[in-house]
Length: 382
Image (tube, rainbow, N blue to C red; front, side, top):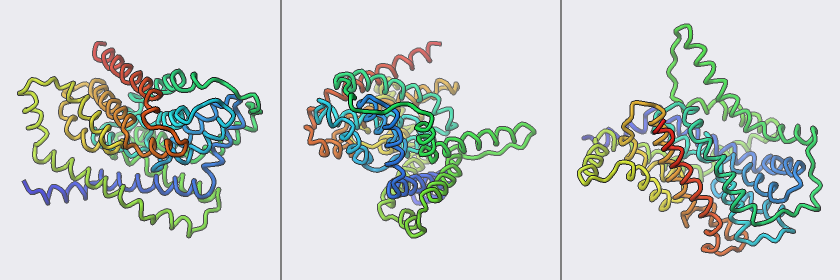
C-alpha cells in the first residue's frame, strides 16, 4: 500500500478540510467572545434569574461549556467561586461542580471537535447522532445534581435573583451567538430536505452544515461587540490554533491509512480468533483511550477508527446505539482522566486535592455508564 498516497488523499478529502475549517472558526468565535466580554455578560445575565447559589454556579459552568475553549473550566471557575463564596462548599466540591457541569453537553453538542470528529468518522447525519446522545446530558444533570449539588446544600439567602421578562430577554440576547448556530443548522438541514422533494438531490457532508452557522455567529458577535478588525484578525491567526488543526490532520490521515490498509479488518479478525466479544472491545478501547488522552478528540480519533468496523448492523438505530455506548465509555474515561486539562486547572484554582475530587465525580460517572448500558440494552431488545 502507498502510505504517502493514502495520507495525501486523506488530507485533501473534503471531510478533512471541512473539519479543519469548523474547528478553526469555533476557536476564533470563542476567543472573540471572551476578549469582548460577551462571555461574561452571558453568564451574568443568568445570575439575575436564580436565587439558588448552586444553580447559579452550575449553570454558569454549563453556559461556558456550550462554547468549547481549551482549559475553559478555568474561565468559569472564578464565577463558580463567586457564586458559592458564602456557602460551606469545599474546594473539592467547587472543583467537581465546575468540572462536571461544564462537560454535560459534550456528548452531542456539535461545536465540540470530538463530536464533530465522531459524526465524520461514523458517517451519519448530525441530527441522528445528536438525538441518540442528548439523553446522556439529561442523565448527567440529574446525576450531578444528586451527587454534587445536593451535598453542598442550598444557601442563597442574599441572592436577589428573580425571574422577569426583562431578565429573560437579556439572557436570550446574550445567547444569540449560540442560538444562531442552532438555527442555521436546522434551517440548512430543512432546506436540503425540501429541495430533495422535487428531485433536486444535494449531497452535502453532514459536518459542513455547521459552517454557515459559525460564520453568521462570528459576524453577529463582531457587530454587536464592535470588534475591531485587528482584534478579529488576531483571533483568526492565533498560533495556538495550529496544534489543534495539526492534530485533526494526523487523526484523519491515521483513519485513511487504517481504512486503506484493511488494518482494522485484520485487528478485528485477530481479536475474534481469541474469542474476545466485540462488545467488550467496543467499550474498553474508547474508555482506555479517554483515560490516557484526557480529551474527547483524542479518544475518538484513536479508538473509533478501530471499533467502527465492529458495528456490524444494517439497522441505523442499532449502529447509532453502539456508537453512543462507545462514546459514553470513552467520555467517562476522559472525565476520570488525571491528565484532563479542565480538571487540573480547576483543581489548582480552588486549591483542591486531586485524589479528594474523585469521590464526587466517580458516582455520577458510574451513573452515566450504567444508564448508557441500560438504554443500549433496551434499544437492542425492542
